[in-house]
Each structure stands twice: as C-alpha cells, then as structure tokens.
Amino acid sequence: MRLNKYLARSGVAARRKADELIASGRVRVNDQLVTALGVEVGEDDLVEVDGRPVEPQPEQVVYLLHKPAGVLSSVTDPQGRGTVVELIRDHQRLFPIGRLDRDTTGALLITNDGELANLLTHPRYGVEKRYLAEVKGRLNSRAIARLVAGIVIAGGIKVRAQVQEMARHGQRTSYRLTLTEGKNREIKRIFRYYGLPLVRLHRTSFAGLSADDLPPGKYRRLRQVEMNNLYRLAAPQYDSQTT
Image (cartoon, rainbow, N blue to C red; front, side, top):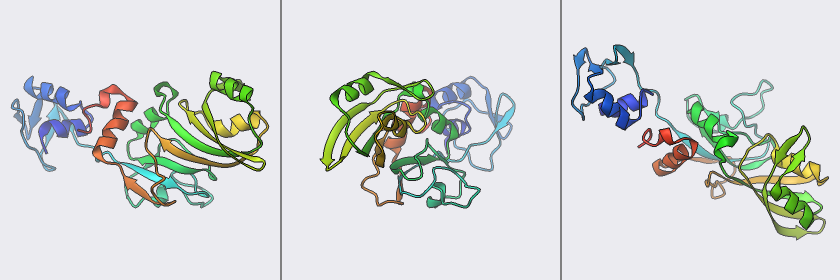
C-alpha cells in the first residue's frame, strides 16, 4: 500500500494532504525519515507522524440492503428480534445509516463508517430520500400545497415534502414523497396530521440509490464510484479518502 493511502486510511489526512506531510519531513517509516512520494508500506511497518504511531482503519464499506418488513433497523435487539445488520454477512462492526420502521421496506444503507452514517442522516446535508406511501383516504390539493410549503406537526416540528399522487384503488391512494431533512417517523407523522391511516410505506431510494432491483432481504456492496458520491454528499473533506 502506498504511504499516502496508508495515512489516509489511518485518518491522518486525505491523500493530497498526506503527500504534503511526507514531503515536509513529518513522516517516518521504521524510524527512517521518508520524504519521497510513492513509498510502499506493509502491515508490519511502523509508520509515525510527528513521532506518533498511526495504523490504518478497516477499509470503509457500504452495503445497499432491500430491507424486508418485520426487521429492525438496529445493530442488536434485547428482545431477540431480527435486525438489518444480521442480514449482512460481514464480521465487521456495522451501522445502519438512518432507520426504517419495522414494517417499512426498501432502500437502507449499512456501513462500518460511523462518521459517514452520522453525516448522511444530519438534516444540514439535505440527503434526498424517496418513498412510496399507500394511505386510506386522499389528500386534497390544498393539503398537498401546504405540505410542500411546510406544516407544523405534533411537537412543534416543521416538515415539508414534495408530494405526487400516483394512483387510487377504491378508498386507498398511493403517493410518491421526496424528503431531505430526515426527521424521525416523518411520513407517518405527516399522514397522522391529516388523519389518513398509513397502509404501506416503501423507501424507493436513499441518496439516489435504489434497492428495488434486489429481492427483499438481499443486499450488495456499493461500487467505488457510488462510495465516492456518498462521501461527497456527506462532506467535501471526504473527497480524496476513498479514491
């Protein structure tokens, strides 16, 4: 592994900044000063920055899961119920990025990068989430316009969403909703505000990633280009961490 990548994986700096650290004489390998770029290091080498040893963290990984109904969006459950992490065949410590209620299905990301999980779920970054909701009843045009502008629900929380009516089946209506703030149980609380019972909720995409081509309960590892896009969404300082 190249020394600059080793330093980036250790959380010291992104690769370009790591090159600057090396060139400025702040990095030693096996007690030898290294200023040349492109040096290779291995697991048994001792790497120090400003006299302090550093070690690479596990490779960052993100899985895209088609969450089935009946599974909790958590790492463990004291009652022994199934969790999304148990569906992933990976022995690393993993975290779901955000959560879906037990009866909600669809796209859910799972990662070993806790900081990425926190950033992607922070309202500040406005990560787009799309849902398909089926309810009993129907929103009128005024209710939809108010929701687009923003409504204040229980607890004094203001929420807004882009809403499109998709289909009607008897007394039931299907809506496509797009949200960017990610408040807890936001969609259920929206329809409760309007007095419409929610029958089914499915997340069609998170940050542009859809799991609808996967069977429920199945997952895939994100490709490198998809990983890079997620890190850019989370924060600009991640740009060089995964390349």
